[in-house]
Image (cartoon, rainbow, N blue to C red):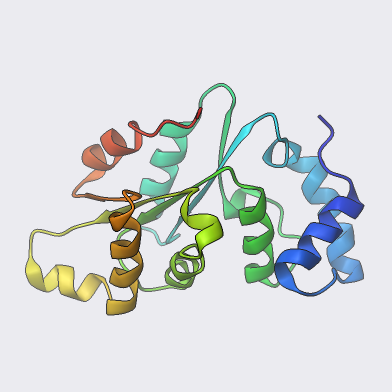
Length: 183
């Protein structure tokens, strides 16, 4: 598959962002499709992995990406896709609209990924989302890690069996390994 046309991407971008692409974004989208056409290929199961890109957290995101990388499945972090716009929320919304499965890996609610978690709590994304949130042994550490709004999102997903807790890397990878991406 060659990926969607520039016109298709422009239309989808406008639908999810309520604005047209700028001329520089249109040029960038051509590069994005060329370099990442498998992300947009409807014959490949696209998995969009969300979480914090901090020094301590990113290795967990990469481990989840490696765990999910198999034939017919294309797991990607947002940073893996060419930056066609300076508006990261516009890029996020476009990529989200193409993702078959959304996997959130959360260790705290400090950063832009907290906004992302709230955004995917909308009905149209909930049925495609699997969230994994870290729990800590120490109550004070647990309290410091997450704010109330973030917990509301996790509880909402947990109520529909789309959120699971994890304690360490092995536990995370074991639970991620249970996902059925070929549904």
